[in-house]
Length: 351
Image (cartoon, rainbow, N blue to C red; front, side, top):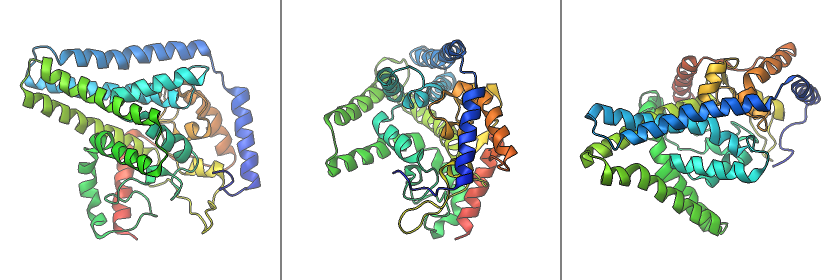
């Protein structure tokens, strides 16, 4: 999918300047990376282990559900902070261990690693928010998140039902979306033995450790375990999907159009910058919690740089962009939620 963006000389020069400025000004201290990753591992993986262990203890109903929910949030934050960077090979120096760690974490959260990586790296990163190129736009006709999607009569009510639908997202991803992609790969003839076995092993492991094992060993009624599992996914889904959507679907983000022959009417640089949204881009705390998802412009321009450096990188990046009259999209986290809901309302009412 090369050469599908417009070549605009001034944007090419700006991109070159950005890359030069970052290369010369960014301090990618390896010791800082190791210290922060160790701390993140202790906080997020340690939190997940603690919450999971509590599932097998004598707990009140509320504490049991709280432990399930805490586990779900900790594993999502663990994936935010580790799996995403592993998928872009920014942690270990070789691809092999990055891949193994990426698959292990996606197994922990129940998603099929290979299916997600193919869509994310080879589709979404190439042309975010561009119809027919960005696979993240190919979700469901139930919710209209871009002006290129067909307008249906029920979209005028999506501001009401979308937040409710969002609560089912992680369950849909794990048990429906991945299965549909698996079937598509099988029918297309591209299915490999590695893809086939990986899919089933990951799904079986997830169901076994997070649902079957508590049903067998936890001193709780079976119905409470099922309720806890479902509430975990409800909370996990809302946090996951809102965070995902706010990176590209708020009022100010762009949706570049294409010509009939598939040429994107925007340069690659401006496609990445205008179609992405940052949340607290200079905050070390926000970056620590969200694993760089709050620094999405930097990530799209420099996916090969680990997210721990993004607040520092943004000081360089924003300086160059603003000096050349380009203002990046930026919201707070809560402001991004509000802006996303306003976008849903607007897209639900207009054609």
